[in-house]
Amino acid sequence: MKAAVITFPGSNCDRDLAVAFEQAGAEVVRVWHKDTALPAGVDVVGLPGGFSYGDYLRCGAIAAHSPIGSAIAAHAQAGGYVLGICNGFQVLLEMGLLPGALLRNAGLKFVCKPVALNVTSVESDFTSEYGADAQITIPVAHHDGNYTTDADTLARLRGEGRVAFTYAQNPNGSDGDIAGILSENRRVLGMMPHPERALDAAQGSADGRALFAGLIGAFVPG
Amino acid sequence: MKMRVIVTLKSGVLDPQGEAVRHALGSLGFEGVNKVRQGKMIELDLTETDPVRAEEQARQMCEKLLANTAIESYSLEPVQG
Image (tube, rainbow over all chains, first blue to last red; front, side):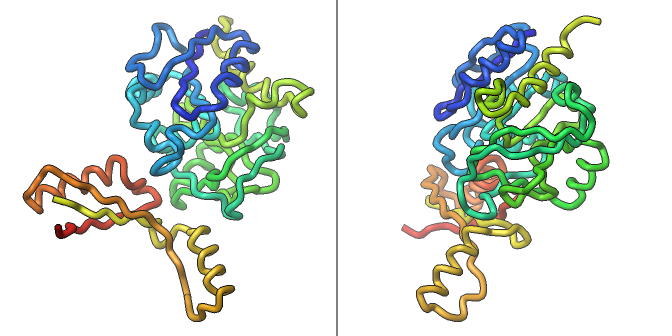
């Protein structure tokens, strides 16, 4: 399984994300935002956390229209896997690959701490390794993680089991306590918490490992 | 010609920054501020000289990049001089 980790100017979790994919057994290629094509044979695209383009205009807005953007959109539209974490989630929303938007945290403060998450859908390759209704601990670190969408979209996300994670204690005012959502085909996941920062007990939690393991497991024959 | 773009959060979308500004105004003694909405102003200096075409260009820029129409609305006006 081959994973491409995209680096935008201002990305700062790209190396951690690459390590997470590698530890799970993937071959990782690093891709620069000015590239216009993904390397051949890429199965998963990882959009890392950080402050792409200095968060100018809106978080993720400029990155969504960067030179590599159309290749990422084409990959997703062809049924490829995409994982967007934190700023990567913001980029996915700005690209229109997931519905809704992320506003400034309701408390206006940057929130940086481990949070308890409910795994609310195990029907995806990202979440299949978690037990149904599992509660896990993953850190968040963001200023704009307040997920919002219209009532119809929220009802549809819930009805179709596309809310992957919710916060046990909402840290940012997010609609429906939403921490992460899936695309219709369940191959695009956007989430504010950082599973790549929870790979080892020494980091405070190893609950992020199962996400990468599940994803890699989807490519193991049999 | 120049076009001015004003981008604000849609009326139904909670604006926590505007709300914080309202509180700050209250604590400074400004009374009667019922609501504050914060937004951004973007000025575009366009080669286009026809006002209708310039507005159409600016509108497309708003739809594609300058505003996130899921949460934001925008207004356009020509700038004199």
